[in-house]
Length: 311
Image (tube, rainbow, N blue to C red; front, side, top):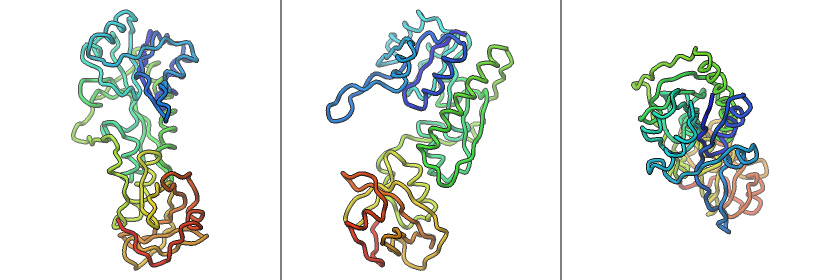
């Protein structure tokens, strides 16, 4: 098949790599425009652009999708199919209707659950023990198109969003190639989504970062995992604002008030939570510093057991 690929972040690269190796013709790659990064504000290409250039694939970076530029490029490329993976832009109806085989999307959840921008994070934030990927036809609604295939995977209780992101990217690429084979053979079958089972996964923001010790230990553990690496869960320890990078659930109980420091020494940092369970902070990152073990932080910022942390 003659295919145009659309994607932007690291999540999309395995799908594009698999597509390029599958024997299908990738006639063009759409990705978002380069953006300035770091102190020098130097323009940084997207991960999809970097891979595409290394693979000799033609790259297009229209700033908008509704001003006619993208549509004009696509008409010249004449794709039979458009494959989208975390592109970050909404495709207007005239683009959705252009390829004769339609547009398919690689989505990182088991739709209709977690439609939207941050499905991987919200699956962890909500304490799910399973997620997966969905290959679906694209429609005008937000992740509402008919489902072509799904594959599930368990979420380990200590797995963070970065690790799950990588696993789902590979799983999505694998499933995408299987679906394209079915489409080529004419055996692909699509199933409508049940909107009654849907839920939304909105974009993340720093408003989600502060840890509230009145929550359960598991909820706080999931907050740390789900917000890693950005925007990250945060707490104030010894007047120092820290990103909390890695936590553990020792399965121990306390009758102390939520936020009470139970242990703060070379063995670690343990804090009581709202359900009487204990959360262990293993790694953290003070503002302006590198990630370090909690025990290393405590060497320079000693905290007495019994201190009450604020929410």
